[in-house]
Length: 474
Image: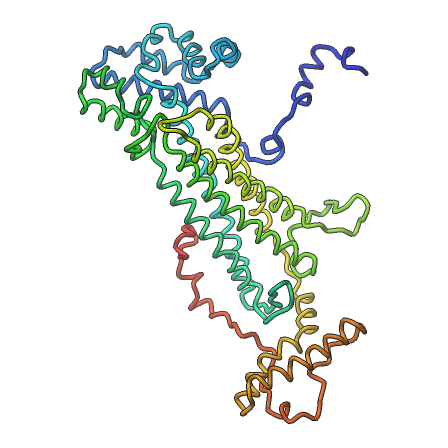
């Protein structure tokens, strides 16, 4: 069927499939995070900010009536988005378009809406509210991931496994200890996000260039009233403090601070999920796999780590977004330029939406990680002769040998054994070799035991910290 034959009703029903939709919203992010950066939240917040301003101005003596405020409050939620879009097409100014739209349904309050304010009063303050609320959504999600991973680390604290450096077998570690490496990074991210959340302030009521000149004029030069106006509106918006100094906007360094914490989280996630993917290839650890899940359309045996792969893919995007606020902050001229606006409309929401789906997916992964001890044991046994070499060298030195001579002798024998494994497909027979060399006559002692021994849980950290407060692990 050609498009010309499609009925208007069908076209309207299919309209959402006729244009690009960001997969961050249509496919991935949670409803709460998608709403946090939605037009509805944005513009209802603008209206709330106009109400806060009117209430504070009235309380400080400006001629604003209760009826005007009540009228504004009664229409805070019923936004005519079609009218606002028409106004913006005509005025080429989004804030004034919504001032006119709000005034249309609040004719009594129309004269005092946006009184003394600049566009950044609603724009920047709303952005700060969204950043604050976005962090409040992410922090509990990260805490849940930390808790699930802590359970995993505790469960497998004593299960030996091959360590890897350069992705080559190294000394033994344990599955739980490796998970603690992941945990430590996540706890650092939790601390960074919490600090960014705690450091957020309100732009407040600062006027067009941060001098509050328009409000000083409204209050006839009364500085105390202007400062009280700023304090009152800040408190109504749910902030304890406002930035003392601003230009027309709050410093774009604030965006850097928030998004750098998210980008750092992205780096952590990419490393951890890459580790999981590598271990899945070894069949030692596996992410959850549903009963009817299909790994490959062509290869029915496949159990691909698709959740970890998704996290890596999105984490790269999250890290890459960090470049935007850095460049934006660096090119803000004097009190402000508008070349920040279009960029921030993309970079701020996308960073939070991306972090949101990553953490939701990670919770699913960490709640269902599967460990295969028998496979791990087989890998250890295969590499155990090499694992024992450091212990053997130390025992030889304790028995009177020269450390460098012992190391060289073991190195040569190890390479010979490795050649048998790699070139002939044979077994690792390093320990079975009995060359007539006096260096190897020293007693080797117990070999192959891991050098790292986990502390008993009764004396360990997991029982001395508050699971509901991941920051207590520091």
